[in-house]
Length: 170
Image (cartoon, rainbow, N blue to C red; front, side, top):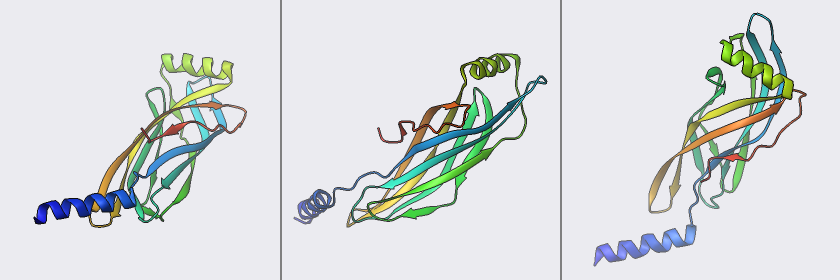
């Protein structure tokens, strides 16, 4: 008798609260500057804004282990990381990442790719990584979830801000 009663209580609690998985998304990005010289070295400065969203109406969400790698082809440019943080119920938080790169040596294939990108006036960068989230759902307990991002950002070199459709929501 106790098992069916617990099942009904958990189902009613779930149906009432309707917990939603928090998510992360890239809301906007911009190439601030890019430099490429004859010695096959590239440097860039970009701004990327990632939004952490909690659509739950009654549960705080905790985001932790946030780590995203920004790269050009196979060359790692930067790792975007954030300390653990909470997002209140039905709220969001924007994280502003300013990415200054060091001099990045490019191989001949990457040199051709950056020359082609500069001719097109758009540089394609990859943003990949994950964040973990945890939130408490009434009697069910704490729920943990991994949020993945896998984006290709097409950044114009003229400092135009883009608004990519890149989210962890499946």
